[in-house]
Amino acid sequence: MVLRTRRLIGKIREINERYSTPHIEMSLGVKISLMALRIYLLLLVSLIVYKFVLILS
Amino acid sequence: MNLFSKLYYRSRKYWKAIQLYLVIAGPGLVVMVADNDAGGITTYAATGAKYGYNLIWFLLILIPVAYYVQEMTVRLGAVTKRGHAEAIFDGFGAFWGWFSLIDLMIVDWLTLVTEFIGMTAALLIFGVPAWLTVVGVVALMGAIVLHGRYWTWEKIALLFCALNLIYIPGAFMVHPSVRDILRNGLVPNFPGGFNGELFFFLMANIGTTIAPWMLFFQQSAVVDKGMLEKDIPWGKFDTLFGSIVTVVVAVFIVVVTGTVLMGVDIDSASQAAERLIGVNHYVGTFMAIGLFDAGLLGAICISLASSWAFGEIFGWAHSLNRKIKEAPWFYAFYFFTLITAGLVVLIPGAPLVLITLFVQVVAVTLLPAALVFLILLLNDRKRMGEYCNSPTENVIGGIIVVSIVTLSTLYGVSVMFPRLFQ
Image (cartoon, rainbow over all chains, first blue to last red; front, side, top):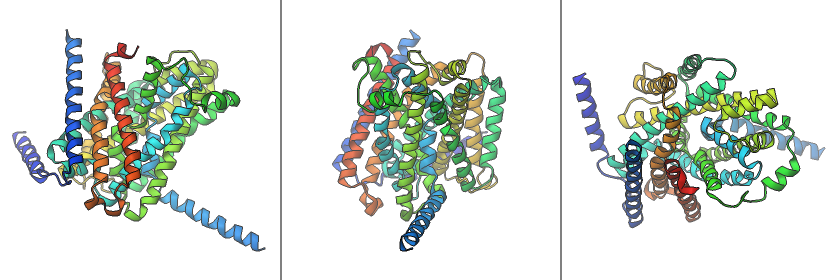
């Protein structure tokens, strides 16, 4: 079990290294799109967490 | 004589083209018809029961919407020979890659649960217990993939696609008024004015038309099928044909419930089938069979979408052309998601309604990201070369993506806060 977990962690590290550099050209449009996506997801996740807290309370 | 010989050669040319299409047909048609999954059938049945034929025009608008989004995955898959998950990892790095992959796994698994809910409810109408449906479906889906050939899997999936057309004879059997369909259905209108409830239905219909798993599935299927750049025109045609078929089926479902169940509040497609059986036994039976088929087709595609995506990233052999021995992790993941989703439905008192609602919310976190990445990847001239998006395609795609993101987000928010749009 421990060995398998270590192997999995090793594999994930390998994947992270393999894809550490984005290969798409980071033009201004791409940068803006990714930033907008980050903000969108942050807002949406906050909303989901808020709803979850409402359900719990 | 000259005319006859010309006609003969022309018909032979068309027949050859049809034969060629039948060989190449697959990913586009399957993904589009599978889009009419159990959740989709419920949405269309409820739309028809609530608004009659009045929103048929809106469904027709969804043909180009679905086509433009999905055809981009054909080009991306055929040119890069990579699935959507791998393309995101490679293009945008590990952070966005993991986000997409994990989100896809959650959304797919939850959607798979809803497919099992639909299938068990459909067969319960015929007295088949839920456990038997789950066991039967897992065995059937196992048998479909274990042949070790993508081609076999695809042709079996196409057979299930053909069964999806069962709603068409059903619609003719309820004798709808063609005049009313043409008058009310084809002229854009907002029945009862543009209010919150109508907006919710419009959003739900869009939400069922483009789902995140569809992008991942079609791109991976294009790669697994081995489609090349020269096959792109056929892939596009396949996608267009599929988007027309899926909307035509949706329209016929609306016609059935709009004719027979107008004014009835429909919560699920199985409820619609039960009510229809009370009115016309055959039409209700067709609805139940169609619901089961829709759930099965959805399950077939969704479980593969996740397995392909994980295989691409973890470097496992991940093709339907491989046998179990050659791709053990690919098949293990496939059966793991399938069996666990089926078991959830069998748990007494499992929060199935909550799961159904939760799917819509979680899907909203993945869909915008997947769509934005799709557009950006299609603009990567270095990789895509001549298959890069043209400015016109970017404008059309951009408008569609912004509209889908806005409406699906509002839909997700309205699921969380139902009073917001009332």
